[in-house]
Length: 334
Image (cartoon, rainbow, N blue to C red):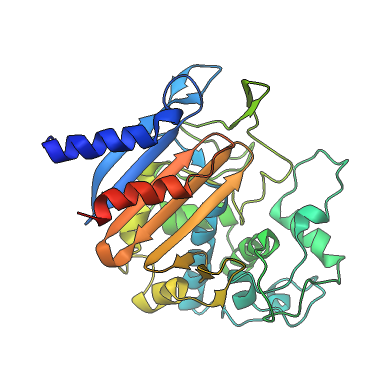
């Protein structure tokens, strides 16, 4: 934590108390608090790799899970600014094997497409990992939808898997390469990666764990972990500080594009939560959680206060949203 004043020490001890369960020899967490562009809290707890006894540091990269969706939406908006696509394009224009002709890119961004969850279409006996292209293959044989496009809301990993494929078609680049070349490297996020086994590596990698019968068991990958568009990015609190800074300026996108991402487009199934493009919106906060086997993460931004809290964890429970809000409250009240 930056600074040495008594107030800072008091806040630091209160954060340590909130994160107490993550400290020690089990899987842990990294915590980032950014205020006015400065990292005023940058702390890590616990272990990234229990088997090798590697401690978590601020450079440790966690699988972001659905926190990845905000990068996917930014990629789509970038291509829209370049005139390579329109967010109101029919998805069929880019992915003609999709049976539904009236679903648009906007529907995918806002979880209003009605597409069936690809997890429910997978063969439970198949132990091979599915990729984004495999999601399209499953959906190409599925004519059912939950509702007509634009007539409801249902959180959709299927939609974000299709968005990554659209990024590839519109840009002419592989999705992981597009993110690397146009977002991660320009922002100095040098160790952030849309991870592909056998193609890329994760530096300073945290592995995921689940508490089973009183012991920590490595549960780092599932059959859906190779899908990039809905949750396949690994990053650290150090790199995410660069990402947070870019959300305030026009290095990546014009202000009008960020405004689209941050403006409520639909109500959700939670009464106090609306959804933009890859962001949940509650009151003054922009936020998103990420949950996958062995990882629970959240980013909570208070843009009007120039305050952001990130909590990344490599354990299956608990979800850290409430903890992040409690950490933010220590600074919102100041």
